[in-house]
Image 1 (cartoon, one colour):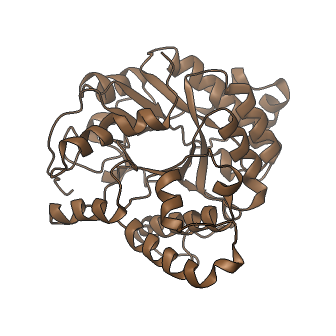
Image 2 (spheres, rainbow, N blue to C red):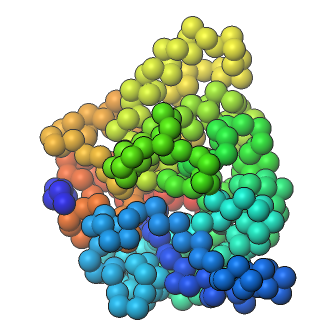
Length: 358
């Protein structure tokens, strides 16, 4: 595991990507109707744990997160202690990556999304006011997703809407626009997080890989395609107040993509007249990206140069990606950044992006 160089501390930080796990599908049963409880009992109480990381691999969980009797991220007391108390961070956003987006039955997916949100509110958000959460929705059914956003939007502890990066179609398509409109109507960003997809969707643009390392590296490629889709399909023209957060996407690929998109737009912009300015300007205004996992160059100056090439230090949001293990220090903050950039990264960018309840 690579040891990164860090500077500063996490006092006052807002951790924008923390994963709480469902310890057992049965904890969700009290939040399901009798019909769905019977449905799942007949199916043998199926777990929807997605296992995006091989369970026993080093990157799946930091050693201190592997508690006895709980999957990593399933123990609220351990998560609060390790993410907040020990680091000095003042807030954490929970992204519960349960396998709702992978279900082919959209009605079951909608019921499970509601159950996960109710369970998160009761079992997690009620424990500590420093915890916020994403609204889990079923992207298989935009109507149901909108209904779930409307149901939860009044609860200020929920601060964004969670979608997977691997979807049935590119996320810019009109199919998903009702979700974006509902989120923006309530001042909620949409977080597109690595993962998702059903059994029929390959994780790489070239098809099915042989090894996990191929799938892992292809995550960034998928995010690039989704970002181009959001811009080219006109999502930000249709919903100008929308902010989109990419989580676990990396960001060192962003300068070259912005440059190439600007270049090609100049020659092809008659095809997309709603893109009425440089795509890079639209991206800077509407996109935010979480820090971890950080694909950091071996020379720290290269990382600073990457941020300079983006031409903004207001796009990055601090994250630990707990319980996943991407760094060997208690504070996953890269060295070499200016004091203003550190302030923006730790909390100022998040404060501008999210609505936090008092």
